[in-house]
Amino acid sequence: MLEASEAGNTRPGDRTNSQAPEAPNPAAVVVLAAGEGRRMRSAAPKVLHEIAGRALLGHAVHAAAALAPEHLVVVAGHGRDQVREYLSELAVELSRSALLAIQHEQRGTGHAVACALDSLPAISGPVMVTYGDVPLLDSGTLRGLLTEHAAAGNAITVLTAELADPTGYGRVLRGTGELAGTVTGIVEQRDGTPEQLAIQEINSGVYVFEADVLRDGLAQLSPANAQGEQYLTDVVGLAHTAGRRVGALRCSDPWLVSGVNDRLQLAEIGAELNRRLLAGWMRSGVTVIDPATTWVDVGVRLEPDVVLHPGVQLHGATTVCGGAQVGPDSTLTDCWIGPGARVVRTHGNGAEIGAGASVGPFAYLRPGARLGPDGKIGTFVEVKNAEIGQGSKVPHLTYVGDATIGEYSNIGASSVFVNYDGVTKHRTVVGSYAKTGSDNTFVAPVTVGDGAYTGAGAVIRQDVPPGALAISAGEQRVIDNWVPRRRPGTPAALAAERAAAVELDGAPDQVRPTDPGDTVGTPTAPHGGSTVG
Ligand code: UD1
Ligand code: CA
Picture 1 (cartoon, rainbow, N blue to C red):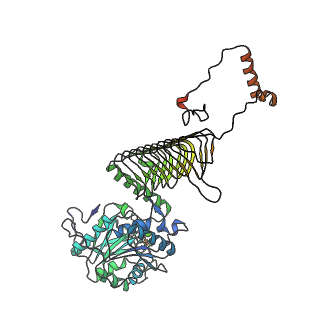
Picture 2: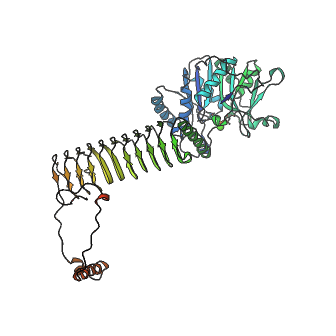
Picture 3: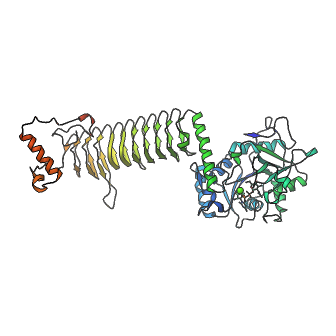
């Protein structure tokens, strides 16, 4: 989205990059992130606020690292300890570390860059400066700026943008006559004359400097301006005055250079990044039914023919494989969803769902939940640290914690895997082709063998051998006419009396509705329905 020059209006300071050589790797990229970000009104430093699952600073450092600079420096001040901690996490993610330079007092952008250079050995060649709070700026744009800088043979190249409302930004001053198009200086909002403030081309705050020009310029900065700060922007005017060539690259997409100053901008830029991420996935073959209610983090991976229904949030390193459908109304973090699986109204974290498996509605998947191919985790089921094998089903109202369930087993409705004795967690093992009754309690550690059955309401405290039936519920006792005698006059007692009267009248026996096809759980057990049929 870059225009080094506008068609038919080539300026000496501007060049197209069509015949440009490959951009060299920069000697250094300096990411400025020392500001307090007061307008965020936050205990956390501004640059650690996240969009699309990554801190603002993370977006900036990722883009910088992609240029493979010799040195990568982050300048921090406010919240430096939190920034340091975050940078060490990022180093793992990027397999390269960024140097942290501390700016103890925020004395301006020029002073911040000087702090960065002070932390480095003597360097030469291009030095790029970017901001930690400009998250949409991508490595392609930065590379374009480096390429333009090299191709034009500039001492400084400024990334600029044309804004309908440039208020607040530094304005880019261009030369006239012989110097038409070259950049002669940058003037800040608070220091500009009315004519200068009418200029709509703004300084994005991203530049490439030749190291020697930068060093010379920084040494000459003074805080004699409206904000009493050492302005990095003054290096531009100083270089021009010293006869060095300053060019610009215009960015035609203002979003790329938009910074976050408050939570409103955090939400706006976050939404724009999400739109762009979704657009990319749709172009690569993912159906997003309702982009307005679908959110994906930068680390998410989606394969062609995935369908995302409305109200889906995919976070962290979630992967959804081809043909799988997620949603509506599901939030998955660091999950793996296999090909063709279906996940409906589910909250999941750290779970793996096999190919063709089905989850939800209203399932809660916790870390270590692993469902095999064609398996089922059904309605109001919570699963944690449990492996459920191929074709096995946990269809209804159940907690499965710390368990291994083999293949093609069925867990009856409303069961609890009792994993915690108050001190230690224990495991339950259920074999393959087992059928456990409804309302079972598995008191771990305990094992139910292959092909075993358990009765309804069983409390399984001892291992069940393969092929056995375990029943632990007591015999049913019936005390006739207890309700009319002990609860006389209640609606229940009256109903019982009416029923008795009908029986005495010799009315034909009412046929009791039975509908085994639509009841819960396991098939009728051999001892006459102690499981729910
Ligand atoms: C700066 C530019 C302005 C440009 C604008 C783009 C200067 C003097 N002005 O203005 O021309 O249009 O960015 O957004 O550079 N920072 C430090 N240490 C400091 C001061 C700032 O690390 O002492 C960091 C901030 O955390 C921030 C960035 O530098 O990430 C920009 O600082 P800010 O004060 O917001 O500069 P602007 O006034 O916006
Ligand atoms: Ca700013």
